[in-house]
Amino acid sequence: MSAARTATDSAVGAMGADPARARVTTEPAPVTAPIPTIAHAHAGASALADARAQLADAVGELGYDEGTYAMLAAARRELAVSIPLRRDDGSTQVLTGYRVQHNISRGPAKGGLRYAPSVNIDEVRALAMWMTWKCALLDVPYGGAKGGIAIDPRRYSTLELERVTRRFTSEILPIIGPHQDIPAPDLGTDEQTMAWILDTYSVTQGHTVPGVVTGKPLSLGGSLGRASATSRGVVHVAKAALESEGIDPRGATAAVQGFGKVGRDAARFLEQEGARVVAVSDQYGAVQAGLDGAGGTKGLDIEALAAHVDATGSVVGFAGGDALPPADLLTLEVDLLVPAAVEGVIHEDNARDIRARLIVEGANGPTTREADRILRERGVVVVPDILANAGGVIVSYFEWVQANQSYRWDVRDVEQRLAERMIAAWHGVSRYARDSGMTLRAAATTLAVQRVTEAHRLRGLYP
Ligand code: NAD
Image 1 (cartoon, rainbow, N blue to C red):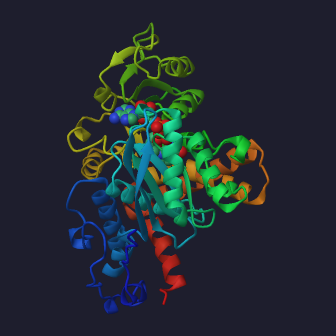
Image 2 (image 1 turned 180 degrees about the vertical axis):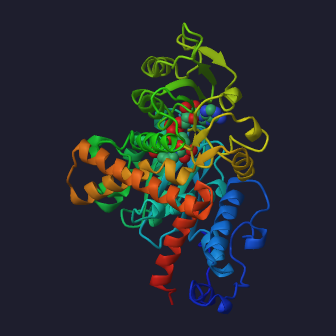
Image 3 (image 1 turned 120 degrees about the horizontal axis):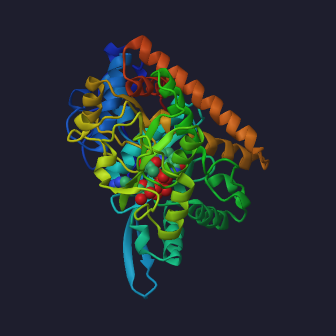
């Protein structure tokens, strides 16, 4: 385990108070690659490079010093583990997993657990940092974390996935817990994964600990409204953003990339709001709605599409639409584009071709930094991930509160409180962006960095 030491007395002592006294530590931090200084934070193209560059911009905007940046650019704690797996055929395979706690200044670390072949330490670091900003922006009392295992879950049986999850849980056991770090579902994981983590952790404690995970099944203390919370939040913010752009959500056209936990319900809720979801994709392909009698575009029938996906595992071959090259979904002429799959799908090579008026990021990190710049120049409004997809962590927080109190809230309470928080955050970020002339992403990141730094300043640096 490498606990990245990133701050020095002088660095934290200088926060906000006396920048002139700031000194950047010369002690090398035990991480695989050096953390760039603010001046070098914009070099490189990866999720982590983008995350650090966003941080550097926010730190610059706030007038904080290099030490503050250095402290926030690196994770507080990182754990890489080997996961030996007994395959169903009797052979043994060793997988690699990670848990990164980026920041815990405002409360326990919180963040999803991802199962995907592309998982690597830098991706997990970036996602953990974005979780810190998301929790601070939405004012939930958590720090940020993320975890992942480099595995393609489609190639493993359910029993194998259970063994992987239990072994991974036992390896990261020392750093998780209801007051330490609380995992949740992400790409490639679901409520069953959370149930296995809950059980493995609880067995080691000798009693059931429902607060150790969120996004768990209802029958194990999950919250009503959690499964659809991220998507509901995406649609609350999408509606507000469309309206602020002068577009009536009823009748607006939308394209949704990804038809998993986030994309599927986002498409469904958009349809319920009267929008026309004209195209949807997943990792296998894409479908597009046909034309109506008058030559306009119809919306896809999302319920029928969901039934098709349940039956076949993919949107491909859906009889209620036409096949579309998946890359073309991103460049359709629509009012709203919701990327809800993976990082980096909107990049410098396709950003000039985007014809959506508004992008609302259901996924984490779907827009690269270079694409962000191009979209800004072209007047495409981007509602950033740390705001748009925060509904999941908000209701995760509600679930954790309910679990710790052994009390269940009514679904209307959950959804009402979710809507209030999302809309309040939208107004806070859009107002700040308008007043400062920043993009919504820069405004959201700056607000969040300010809150996290304030927590550090008030707590001081131990010893
Ligand atoms: P999921 O595994 O349930 O679904 C992912 C979907 O994306 C699937 O339909 C998959 O086929 C599709 N997909 C994968 N690669 C693709 C590609 N290259 N092109 C098109 N489609 C592709 O995952 P999820 O939980 O819906 O997460 C999606 C994104 O939302 C991730 O970035 C995740 O970090 C983010 N997110 C999830 C939550 C949550 O509560 N689940 C909360 C906040 C953010």
